[in-house]
Image 1 (cartoon, rainbow, N blue to C red):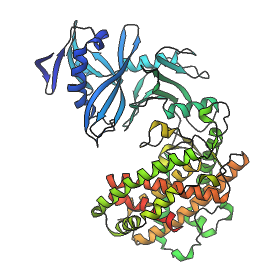
Image 2: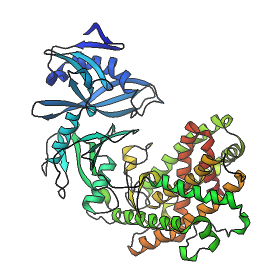
Image 3: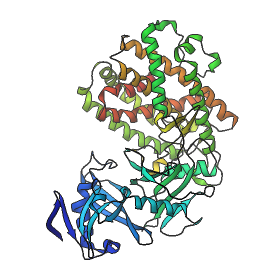
Length: 542
């Protein structure tokens, strides 16, 4: 029952005759907690991904104990059902505290239990909980067959627990930094399967010893009531870094554009190239090296090398079927076409409904996009797998500059969770490795235009001229990347197809990526819609 006594507005006290350790047996508590408490609490959390939909109800799919001696915490697996006839699953660990000082920012519900009063809170805000999790992972057995499976890497011995703190503001997950040396990422939105980030990170660093991703240290997986393996958390070593590659590229591109704005060079003085031409840095015209800078060009070449090495590692497994390379076939083509035609129709509808938010060149490109809808749809549907000789492998799936850390003179690749809009099964479908390359190229394109938009009031050069230089810079960054990437993959015998096949796949994947991006920009930043629309136009006009 709910008492009338209230400790704070909107926090009625719940009374239960159960002790905390047995509270999950109280059906009255579960009913009230899910319907009256969590429905209000969960929608306010940063990691909640259903803000654009209407919540219908919450069910408790499963729960498990996280326990150490007398300390007991509960991990809740919540099914959030929406009016739009779909659902999400979320992970929420809860703790009971009797001291209100531990329940200031993170309280979920005041409660009177059989033997004491206190508060239910999100356990991640409690250091004692974080310490228990650390100790369970660091002392994990090589084989754990219990429903809650803690795992640690065989190649690493954990030191004793010293400290823990939140990494900072995150959107979809919550990361804890331990001993200022390790990061444990709790997955808030979960899936009835192994999380790709856990699966890929463990495979790359623990099995393939790929040195350019954070080393895998441990994890928590649970076996739910349906006997399905669900990933709850992933622990990795912190890697020293100088920030992400997105910020690095923005800084470098800002320098380039400042020079263009100051020197006012004639655009016609710079030699153009076709998109997807490959060029060695040593073969670039002097004007281009002077324009872009040798430092950035070398960084792009190194990034191509690390990307190629990642794909080589992912394409070199022949025992574990989840990572064994495969060929293109009709099943893949049908899956791809169905997925993209649905997404494309969604973007068409969004564009038509948001034309009144666009102006200038963005509006012109949006009208061109709508006028070419049949041509684009045909290109998506006419995916001809029979002409493709390259391999499909597990890929990063959401590869962009924000997923890459800069480490002095090197790079470290992060976050293998996959494309946010995709289902867990879709994220594990083997794809052409060039899809990751296309994602990075779209990120180059974004960084160029973001630099123009972020500083346009300070530039005296006409925006149209800045766009022209941007497209030229983009072509040369792509040319340098492709030359190195093809060379490294070819040396390792990773089959990415012959020249025309590579161009075909890149065009297809770039079109797919730009269509995907269009949805986000129309919903969130109409002014930036020009970037994916320009990307689509580039492919159509190539």
